[in-house]
Length: 257
Image 1 (cartoon, helix red, strand yellow):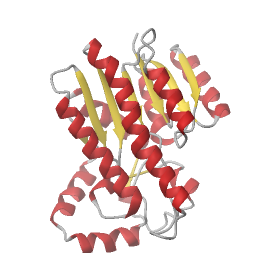
Image 2 (cartoon, rainbow, N blue to C red; image 1 turned 90 degrees about the vertical axis):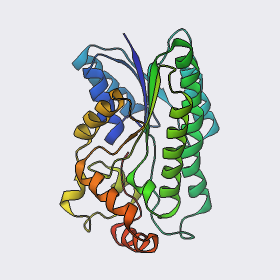
Image 3 (cartoon, rainbow, N blue to C red; image 1 turned 60 degrees about the horizontal axis):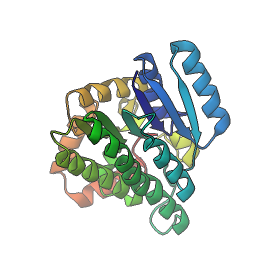
């Protein structure tokens, strides 16, 4: 039986990935900061689907947290076949309004952790000539909007470049770029959502279903909804200074976790 490791696994997109993978019969390793939520979620998935579910308490904004997950991914006796790098957060406020420590923590979670955990997982996967990595980015990667968008743009570029380098190895890498997803993300970040049109909201479980289909197809980039695919087509044609104004009105943060 294969094993999947999911970061940010107690809520939102991460929890949806865990539900889907458990239903598909994968054993799981769930990673998050809150031990109580992790253990409750693990017990629920084990009882419902009969899979083995391990928990790893780790804060990926810290060196210790990243190193702990790296160590688990490098365990040759208990290999991980699918890694979902989902952990992430948003900061409320514009550039220079957000404390520098918070900006650096975001880069630690969104960029350094993704780089290191992907590398740790793919090393063994390439030797076994099978495996997959899903790095959760955002449609914010395609618009000029602060550190969040910039960090997610890095995730997209890194993932697609690594996927190209690993072509033919049996290892698949995909950047997942959702739009607004109905999770607790915005509430945790203290961001209002009243100005976001209803049609822009996505369901986390449907999002994961579409992402898994794209991964199976071998895609290195997934924008898992026709509405956002069309919107991103418009974004490619729109002047970047106009996009900056639009994203200012719709909020700093576009997506998931």
